[in-house]
Figure (cartoon, rainbow, N blue to C red):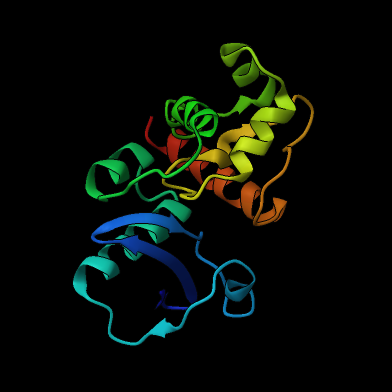
Length: 162
C-alpha cells in the first residue's frame, strides 16, 4: 500500500499487523520506482500512524529508537543481514559509523556490510543511512541527496537539543 501525506508518498507492506517493508517518503514521480501498489485514499488509522512516524523519521522529528518502540514491525532478512542491521540500530541519532567499523565488529568486509545494508527492508526505522564510507557518504538506495538530507536534519536536531 502507498499512503500520501501532504506531498509525500510512503510505501508499506504489512504481514498481518506487522510492518515488513517500507520506503522512505518520496515524491509522486519516485514512489513507483521502489514499490508497487496503489495509493490508499482513506487508510486505516494504524497504517496512517505508521506512515506519519516514517515521515517524522525523515524530517528527524522522532528518534528511530522511539519509532521502533511504537511500530509493530518484523525484520525478515537473512542472518548476516540481521547482524549488520542490529549493529546499525545502535548508531545514535545524529551520528554515523563507517562500513569498515561495522565490518571489523562482525569480522567481515566493508563490501559485505554494504550489500547487507542494501537489503534493509525498513529504512529510517533501521537507520542504514547512518553508515558512511571512510571518505564519502557511501551509497544509498534512494540516492545520496536523500541520505545527505536525512543526515543533515538529524545532525541539526541533535545540535539543537544541547
